[in-house]
Amino acid sequence: MTAKHDAIAAASPWVRRFAAAIPTDGVVLDLACGSGRHTALLASLGHQLMAVDQDISALELLQSATVQIQKLDLEGSDWPLLGHQFSGIVVTNYLYRPFLEELPKMLVEGGVLIYETFADGNAVFGKPSNPNFLLNPGELLALAQRSGLKVIAYEDIYLDQPKPAMVQRICAVKGHLKGCVPLQFVG
Ligand SMILES: C[S@@+](CC[C@H](N)C(=O)[O-])C[C@H]1O[C@@H](n2cnc3c(N)ncnc32)[C@H](O)[C@@H]1O
Image (cartoon, rainbow, N blue to C red; front, side):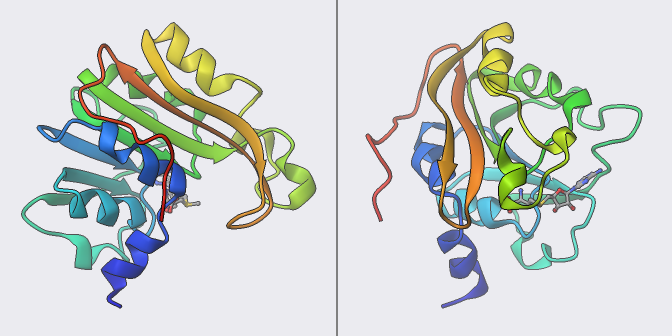
C-alpha cells in the first residue's frame, strides 16, 4: 500500500459517504487539512483541491496539477480565503468559531459543506476538552440554517471509532444538490 492509499483508507467515513454529493466541476477546499487524508480521497475521486493548513510539511507528496497546497494561518485578524469560491468545503477535527460564518459564503450554487468535529461532552473521553474546540448542541445545524444551506444529513453522537468521542457532523448544500448521496457508506 502506498502512503496515498493509506491516507484514503484513513479518511472519515462521513466524508467518504458524502464526497459523492460534491459537484465535480469546481475546486474543493480541505480546510486545516493536516496530513491531507481528505485531500487524497477527493483527488482520487477526480476533484481539484485547495488544501490549506498552517503546517504543510506532510503534504508535499500530494501536490499535483490538480492539488494546490497553501500554507495559511486560518486564525489571524483577517479571513485569508476572502473572495474564493468552492464546489465543496471539507472540515474535520478543526474549529475556529470567529471565521465559521465564512464557510457557507464561499460555496458556489450547488456547493456542499461537509463538516465533522468534536462536540460538547467530549471532555469525558479526553482531548479536545476546551469548549473553544467543541461544537455546542445543534451548532452546525444552526450555521446551515442561518446561512441558507439545505441540510442533507446531520448527527450529534457518540462514536467509538476511531476513538471514543462525541462528534457533531453535517452535510449541507447551497441550493440544489447536483451530486448523489449513497444511503450509507459501505466498505
Ligand atoms: C486535528 S488536525 C485535523 C487535520 C485534518 N483536518 C484531519 O482531520 O485529518 C487540526 C489541524 O488544524 C491545523 N491548524 C490549527 N491551527 C491552525 C491555524 N491557525 N491555521 C491553519 N491551520 C491550523 C493544524 O496544523 C492541524 O493540521
